[in-house]
Each structure stands twice: as C-alpha cells, then as structure tokens.
Length: 193
Image 1 (cartoon, rainbow, N blue to C red):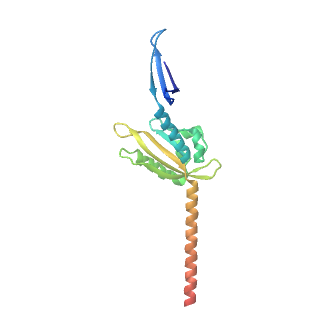
Image 2 (tube, rainbow, N blue to C red):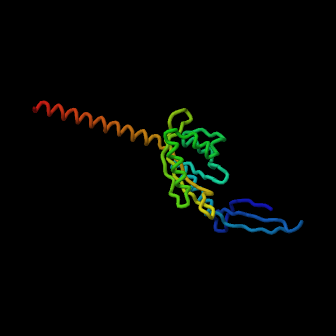
Image 3 (spheres, rainbow, N blue to C red):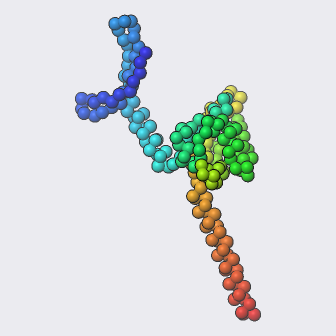
C-alpha cells in the first residue's frame, strides 16, 4: 500500500493538492485513487497561521491513558520548558503554583463531570527562567464513555503574563490615586475647619 500527497497543475493552470493512495492487486497491476485535499491543506495552513499570530498552544487530554498531548515546540509560547514528564496530566498539575493548584483541579473535575462545563482558568506556573508565568487555559471534553466519563478533551493555552502585570500595575495606580484624593480631601477639610 502507498499514500502520498502531491501538488498537481490542472489544465487551466491552477495547482491543487491531491492525496494519492493505492495498493498492488498483483505483480503487474495496481488499484488506487486520488482525492483533492486542497481545501483541507488551506484550512490547515490558516489554522497554523492563526495559532502563530494568537500565540496559543493547542492541547489534547487523553483521560484513559493520563496523557497531555501538545506540540512540544509550542511550549516556549507559554514561557515554560518542555520536559517529558509534562505529557502526564498529574505532572503538569504539579508545576502549577501551589496557590492555584486546588482551584485548577476543582475546575478540571467540574469540566470532567458528565454534565461538565467548559474549563476556563488563569493560573501561575514557573517559567523557563524561574519567573512566574500566568497561563490562561480554555478547553472542553469532546468525547465521553456511555456513562459520561471523560475520554478526550481539547483546548488552548496562552501566556497572559503581560496583561496580568499590566492589570496589577493599573490597580496599584488606582489605589495610589485613591489615597492621594483621600489625603487631599482631608487636607482641604482641615483648612476649611
């Protein structure tokens, strides 16, 4: 049996992608087929570009085998190092900041329940350089057993550290402004008294 993808030029000059498959019938004959996969190739290219522009990591969870599946080359987007142990769900959870871990696990349980909700959570992990990285993960169980137990989930994660730091800085400025307003108001009231 064989299978190959190749670009072919049509009579009108347009290039199309074809998937060619076949197998030998005997030593002199083959049977095969070709399918136009141009739209599938275009969709994949667009997805890859969107993922690159959005700076997201796409992941899958295989609950039956306790596996977290992702493209390890994408982990730098999250600011974390790849290590083989990251492919186990429990090992990934262990890397989550202790203050965020219990809530992360609770949300996984809720999303895994038979009537489960979408998993949506921002949490901290240690980055490649030891700095704290904020990760936003969003996912859903897409396959379940007959009794509702989770089999397979898909989702995305992105590094939101910069926006978290900006929000914290903005909150600190707001508090400082409130303190200054309160101080100035007290000063004005004291001079009026």
